[in-house]
Image 1: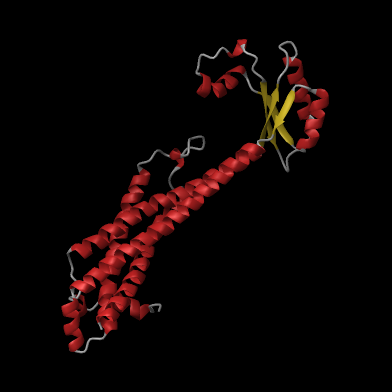
Image 2: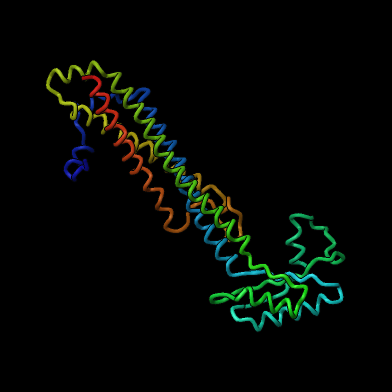
Length: 301
């Protein structure tokens, strides 16, 4: 049952008499606060992971979809001629915005992570690489391969399809993992608060029996527990959200050309997303405590 405005105001204001039923401190109070803070802290990172992988998938998809690589393998005396011929073919190909042959320094930089900085690239039969940038709807890869086979026998076109799809698929799965993590975090928080609320109700069984003798209804008693545990969940989640956000701020800043971990964070209006965590945590605490209270009170009847 949804609370209306007056009911929400009454819920937040509370009832001093009913609040005495719920222990203000003790194991259950600290368990609720700690569980809410810890789950909110983890939720911030799970949310950051989901948003970062979304950006990563978009960037990988856009960068690899708009570029291709032409690899030319030819004898040393024919390398320059075949490179020039390939560039002429690309200049007259519809859908190609630009094409340029990578310099020796650029090719050395590509090989350096695997072979080190001292690789004698000038004395090795390294293929010549040509970077191809697409425009509009792109070029006809099959038609271009036929032209290259006829005019540049040593050229091999790589349109990055076999690289792009696995990378984008991996990023999408990481994003799904982030959302599943958020759901598991919410479930774990609800389970902990349910246990804490059930323990608090059981510990106050005698007080509850006295309240029933003087005419207190179970709904009145349950509301006291629901209110106290909901506010504890909200408070703990707010603290955890702030700590998690500060931890995200302490990470390396996101860079367009940086690695995945350097981009783990929030950008622009995405910084507003963590503000939703405390209200959602309060909702989880409300539902979990409400269910636990009615179940436990029913068992005490």
